[in-house]
Image 1 (cartoon, helix red, strand yellow):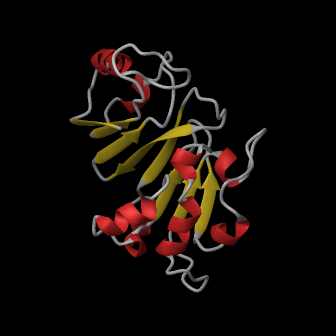
Image 2 (spheres, one colour):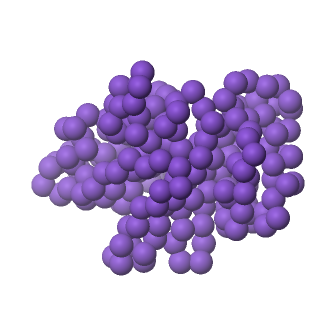
Length: 186
């Protein structure tokens, strides 16, 4: 939920009140700016509903090292449950949500607590890399995903610390034994 997440949701006729969960990968403003706003919108600006989940990196929800927490306690109290995850940890949404799970994946980024995700529900799964540089094991985390959303900052082999370039993404996807059916580059 980066800057403008609420406005873009409404522009695209997506009601934030229909959200069940908000996932936040790391504590950079372009990824977490509207997390609190979306928590409030998901709950109609009220503590009376306390619905939905807020799941994210430790830096975002609790603070870590030089990163101050990005979502204040006030907004965390609006959701039914919030949880910070680190790589390889899994959150189970429970029977009411079809036993869907969210597993945090490893990233290598300036925010050392940053994470990606694999959301599994029924027979489908969606992976999200978060901001990361390429590293051994990155792409294996997303094998068997139905779809994969890849944060890709740079064209070609234009290297930028802690981020992927399009050529690295292509090489990574080509290295996967079981490739996703759909890949979205952001």
